[in-house]
Image (cartoon, rainbow, N blue to C red; front, side, top):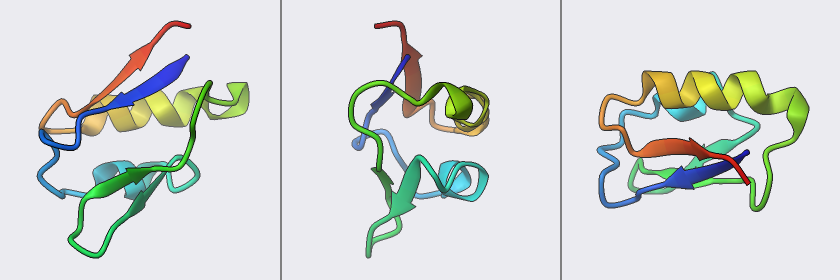
Length: 65
């Protein structure tokens, strides 16, 4: 799986960072930064799904490779 992140849709709630800090960071303005390029490591699949499920703006998606 790969994470698709729509920066324009992000409102800076930071739920992704709080739930999956291995996959997301936060910039100086409070918006998410995707830390993983390419495929999500299999051991982080559950955390990636948790971030997707908890994004109130639907700014994060998981896509099959």
